[in-house]
Amino acid sequence: MGNYGIDIWSDDNFIIEDGLAKINYNCKPSLISIVKDIRKQDFKGPLLLRFPHITEKQINTLYNTFNSSIKEYDYKGTFNAVFPLKVNQLPNFIHPLIAEGKKFNYGLEAGSKAELVIAMTYNNIGSPITVNGFKDKEMIHLGFIAKSMGHNITIIIEGLNELEIIIEVLNETKMECPNIGLRVRLHSGGSGLWAKSGGINSKFGLTSTEILEAYELMEDNNLVKHLTMIHFHIGSAMNSIKPLKKALRESGHIYAELKNLGATNLNSINIGGGLAVEYNAYERTRFYSLSEFSNDVIFTLKDIAKQKGVDEPNIFTESGRFISAASTVLVAPVLELFSAEYDFEHLKLKPVNPPLIQELHDLYNDMTKKTAYEYMHDCIDHMESLLTLFDLGYIDLQDRSNAEILTHQVIKKAISLLEIDDYEELKKLDENIQEKYLLNFSLFQSLPDYWGIDQEFPIMPITHLDKKPTRSASLWDITCDSDGELPFDMKKPLYLHDVNLNKEDYFIGFFNVGAYQDTLGMKHNLFSHPTEVNIVFKDGEVVLEKVLESQKIIDILEDIDYNTDDIRAILRKSLNDHNYKDIEKYLNENSYLKTIWSYHE
Image 1: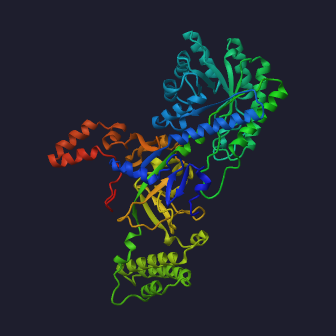
Image 2 (image 1 turned 180 degrees about the vertical axis):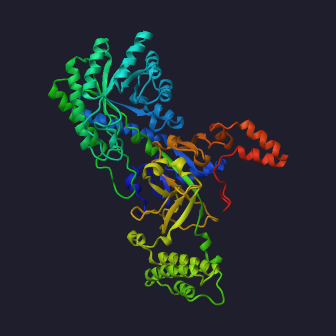
Image 3 (image 1 turned 45 degrees about the vertical axis):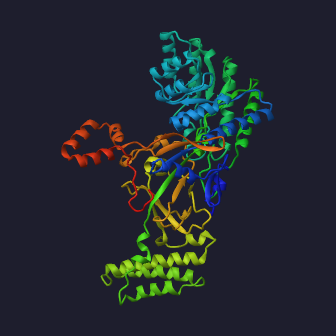
């Protein structure tokens, strides 16, 4: 774990060199150099770094792998993909994605009216748009309008009522009908955290009976010619291919049956998303490669098409997490280490001290490498005894303070002497040795999936990586919520460095945060999104593009429907000119902290 599992989760996007986390691309700049360049422009607090070249790499990998499988199996269908906007709708991510995907005809998937407007506005003409989710008449009408703009759009119906609305809009507007897709509710379920997305009790899709009813309804209204796709989705971040194979066979037979019924223009199967992303820094949790995934999809659908005597379908995927997660890194400054008060400068021994405190002092002075492990546990036992004595009133507050300082120093010295290579030894130690790192960010805003569903994210410092981390770390955010913590986990321990924040900066990086975290983030305590920057490379140089600063306080208040004119007027009336000038300045800054503990923030 000396490299924080970077060989497991990074996919060579990031490397460690010279003790620094670096981007493994082009001139291989370090993250800390980028952070310093941004901070020179007076952007403080947490930073969200986006790397469009990683998005481009993922798109290339997805298409090249599937097209390789198509060539290997002499498959007659084509591979197509759309990015599901729900995964990340923000323009700093979407605009580069659309530009980079143009060569592959990479498209977008929309699940709401607002997302459909984004797709209609920015998607490359001719690149596919798929429309999922529940729809009303307005949303379906938008689909017709998108078709009139020249977009290659497929409305995937989730229920018979949506097909009836398509017929209604078609009759009312006399506009050209978009392509129609049927989302099928398979018996096959998925695997992993989101397995409930598939299976007979899933939220979306048509049953076998409804599929037949939908086909009859399209026949009666001369719409069969517009049926081009069937769609299924059995779960995100699938950790096994086996359920997918079963779903492919089931959907493949449905496709073939509809073809044989007379759906001559039906030519595509949309397998949804589900490609796993490696978040775990301790062991590999993905049990398949992308090439295994693509080979299984191609082989299975080719086999069914041959059995049924139908054309091999075009294949669509909607993998969002695979495309977006790795492209974004959250970097948060450490504001404070809560053991700073345990430095020797705060030790105030009395002329005569309680025996256990004197023993703690002796443990520190007498410790050798041979006795370090034993003395470390002795000091923890002494500390427990001293806390009991304090509760009983036998020692005073100064004694307790001295005991805490000495215990902390004994443990630090022991770890240093032991030079423990086996982290299992550190994991056995008492929770008293944990260090609390206060970070200038909001967990609820920037890592909502950690708080909501215990999603893991790779975490590591971006400097000091040539030094041994020995502090078992709990991470605290700056919200006033006790849930705003990533506690030390003995099963998946995080170790960080013992640093003097008065002399140096220390930044923690959170990786693979590009999927879902941006728009799921909440303004808990009214902290808004971090300052975000796109990092691009031009002529071998790093260029900072599209800097979007964290929201100003006054704008946050306006977002939640406060009348900001009233706020200013009331404050102006209540304050003198000097104080109001200060208030106005603060209203135009973001909510993140300006460090009061050290010089550098």
